[in-house]
Structures are given as structure tokens and as C-alpha cells.
Image (cartoon, rainbow, N blue to C red; front, side):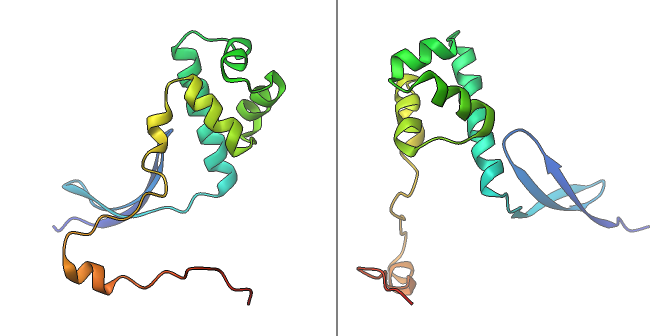
Length: 128
């Protein structure tokens, strides 16, 4: 009797991953599921709130430390909506600015072939 292959979605607080599984022997990740931007924003708000609570900070306390208005922080934790500058201020106040280091970082190449096969990036955008 050969094992059957099943597709199933595993979800935790941090990611949605689609798995191709040879049950019960092994699980192979085949791709990340596409998550809508609104859900990503809510997840970031949930993570930031968890970090705030882990440091025993109230919303008022984090608001004062970061310079982000209290209403903006409350709205962010509730809806995920915030400006980028305010989000960065909150991260700095929580000493989590290192999380920003890998965002939009230049790609690392290991071989010359990887460099040569990379498509050229335009110097400016064009309206089409």
C-alpha cells in the first residue's frame, strides 16, 4: 500500500504555508501561500502588540516612548493601519529596529553566473 499525497494548508500566527505531504512519512514545503496585504498588516500589529505586552508596556507608555500618538497606536493594534514612519518609531521604542535590517536588502550573489543572469534594473520608472 503506497502513501497518498495530500495538499493541506497549515496556519499559525506567523505564516500561511501550503504543504505537499506524503502522509504519514514526510512533509515537503512547496510554496508560500499568498496573503492579502490587510492580513499582513494585522499580523504585524499583533506581533508588535505581543512585543509591547512582553515588555509590560501599556499603550500609553509605548506612545510616550515612541512619540506616536495614542490614538494612532490604538488604531494600529486594532486595524493594522499606520504610517511607515510611525511604525518605525514604534519598533525603535521597543528596541526591535534590527527587524528592519533585512527588508528590501540588496541581493547577495554567490557566483558570477548569478550576477550575469540577473535582469538589469531600470534607473527610473516609466509611465506605461
